[in-house]
Every structure is written in C-alpha cells, then in structure tokens.
Length: 496
Ligand SMILES: [Zn+2]
Image (cartoon, rainbow, N blue to C red; front, top):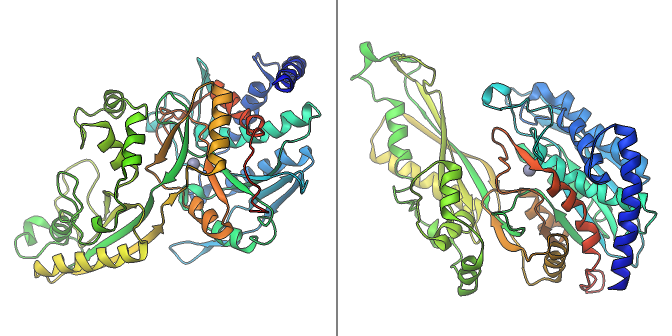
C-alpha cells in the first residue's frame, strides 16, 4: 500500500512537471500531461480521413498507419509495418491493404506479456450527414472531443500508447512487456489480419500471455468489462427477372415483379415479435443460465434512457433482462437495404429488373456460420419455390463472423475488475457486446490466449454515427489501466 502511495506521489509530481513542459510545447491549456498529449495526438490522427471502406481514401489510410508507426518509433520499441498483401475489388482490380503496425516494449521473460489490439480506420463521415462540427477536426466541447474515430478507436489506441509513454517519461520500469497490433481494416472486416495473426502465431504472438482490446463502450455511466461479442452472417438475396427495368404503366400487371418476390421472401425471415422463422437457428442457441440471468439483473441499465437515446417509445421487450439478453446473447435478423430499388426522391414508376436484398443475422454461441449459411439458403429457396415465380433467386453469404465469449472466472478478468476499481473506484459491470469484433475470435482460436475487452468509451459516444465523441477524462482514465493492471497476480500462461 505504501509503495502505491509513493508511486502515486511520484507520478503526480512528475506529471505536474510534464504538464508545464507540455503546456510550453503545445501552448495548450490542460489539466494533465497525458490529457494534453492525447488531445494533440488525437487531433492529428482524427484529421486523417482513414475510411477503410472508400478506395479513394486508401492513400490516407496508408498515411495513417505510417503515423502510428511514427508515434511508436521514438519510444524505442521494436516497431514494424507488416505488409498484409492486397485486397481484391468487386471490379477485379486489386489495391494494397494498409500495413499492420506491430510494436514491442520490453522482453523480460519473467514478466507477463500483454498484447493490445486496436484499429485506426474509421467509418465514413461527412459534415452534411448532420454533424454539428467538422468530423475531421477534433473539437472540444465541454470536455467531449468530437470527431470521426475519436472513440472508435483512435483515442483508446492512443490511451494505451500514452500509458507506455508515461512509464518511459517517469523512467519507470513497465510492469509487463507490452506489444501492440494496430490495423487499418477493422471497419470493413479486418481483411488480411487473420492471415497475419496465423503467420505470426509462432513468432510475434508466441510469448503473448494476454490480449487486451479496447474497441467497445460502456453500457451506462458505470465502467464495464466486456466478455462476449455477437458474430455476424451477412447475406445477399438476389432476385432477377426481366432483362431490363420496365415501365410500370406499360408492363405492370403482365410480369411477375422481382421486387414483389423479394419483399415476399424477406417477410418470412422474422416475425413482427422478433421470432426468427428460419428453421434450426433458434434451436442452436445456448440456453440462458440462472447465473447469467442473475448477472443481467444486477447490471446498471435504464430502459427509459435507452428508449430516449434511440428515439423510440416501445422496445421489443419491456424488461431489462429480456432486453439485454436479446441485445447480446440471442441472434437477430436485420434487413439493411435493397440494391437496385428506386430510392431517390420523386416518383419514378419503374419495375426494377434485378434487386438484391442485404440482410444479416447476428451470431451467438452455439451457432455455426457454415450451418447458418445452409439453413438460410435452403429456407429462402423453399419459400421462393412456393411462390412459383419464373424469376431467379440467388443467395450468397458474404460475411461469416463467429461470436466470441470469454470465461469471466479467468484471473485476467479478476485483474481487469481490480484495474477498473482502482482507476474509477467502482466495480465494473460485466457486459457483452451486441456487435461484432471478429478479430477477438481469431485471437482466441489462433493464439489460444485469454482475451479481455476493457472499453475506453462512453455509452453515448455515437460510434459509426453523427457527432461521434469521447470524453477527455475517460481517455485520461484509460491511460491509467496499464498501471492498474500491474496488480495482476494470475498464473503465468507459459507455465500453466
Ligand atoms: Zn472499432
């Protein structure tokens, strides 16, 4: 205890010295050096439009990865930009994937080695989408930093880097060896990363004991640790009819319209009360245990806040446990859009010749994406056949990401809970994530290491949405996770 107090004193003394220094260098007013450094570095990172879904932005994405390496190199670690090959575009052309940045700080065989994963690519954002500020100009409004990628995932990545920097600035020994894996394709499915992890399983990852991911948010104002994510199977259902689009006045009533067929089969996927109608899907879901039910009961979650946040007056379920369970541990079907449908303003009277529905099914244990692909394809062909339509149906699964679930009894989670308690002075909620972070499952399957998600992001950060933001104070708190994790006393993976 005494040691911790001395450490805190030393830390705050050095921080106050650094604060003056950083104020001088950056001419920024700040309350703490890590906050200040984070702000400037985050501003530089957010200014790069590292949108991995837009091929025209690929040069920006390459520049972003180079900036990450530039940030890490002066810190003296072993930093590499790993070439992960090329991406094939729908038109058959290929384009270079952004390199993955790996780095290593410390290689003491007597210490645990933690590997922090993060990504620095972003979802698209335009001012005209409804942003109050320029999405690529980090803007501080009352302690909230607004900008695309601020919370997802640039600030959390910087928080971990700055944690290492803080140790270095204080001339203090790192409590663990720290590795980083930072990629630039997460928002479009981590293209190329699985193969890179597999290729480096016996090299870069061979001495890694634990993997930490901070690519998610809290559920409420209470800090959280995340122990599971849903997977995702994404489908295209294409219905093709006439050889060209037709005038509905001239041809309407004489042809069997592809859009009518498509809407008809889409309506058989899920009932209005949320029951998935595809045979075999619900049967595969792991049953809700009593312990889980109890855990969900204790989680801080306000249904009215949730309703207000998303702007609805009725949800699919009216009690907390059912709602959380269906958010995290039951599958669902979402219909996202129809390619080829008329969607512009106005009243075009067209019969589209070919329409492609996009829908996805969130995966949970114990569903198997390969089996889901077969179940969905067989089922849609069956219901389509009943329509006796002359049109052609083609069903393809374009993404098949598995869910990830960790053991919350593992010592890593005990360490995580202690770290959160130490930083925020409150016990974290143990939560799951309804979304998909496919790389968590890959890390688990390939490296066989334990993974923990330590969110550094608020429940209302607006990831992927307009006015994405992160609280400055949360970034600073996240920076302290590494220090807090040094209390970890779990078994060493190398010997267990
Ligand atoms: Zn993310």
